[in-house]
Length: 110
Ligand code: FES
Image 1 (cartoon, rainbow, N blue to C red):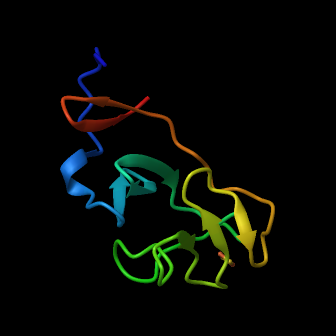
Image 2: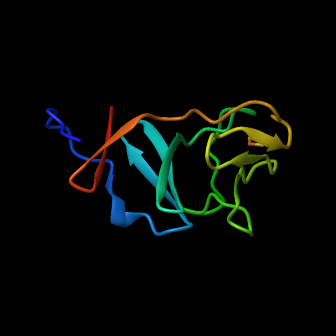
Image 3: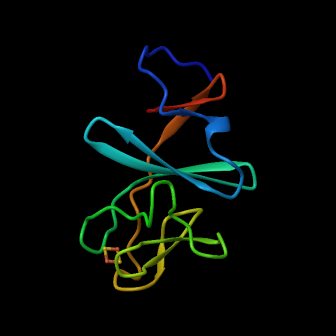
């Protein structure tokens, strides 16, 4: 995929280890990237419950089994592949999916 913009990448694909999450800051925005089975998913780092950040510790967004995204605040659980909340106080709501392009193994916001 080509990219005309000169904007710097959010991160390099190799910055995200398989089966783990990576917190990314860009200006006033915070994101979480997750790599699962070689696929990358990118969401705003903002819980739909009360609009605050999700992580337990820096870069730690996943539950113990690394199967779901877990909010550290009240324990909401979200699917990695589509951000749907499947348990917790915001069940049925979704994380904000962020569109991105991959160019030269780097992730760029659309
Ligand atoms: S802020 Fe995420 S579950 Fe309450």
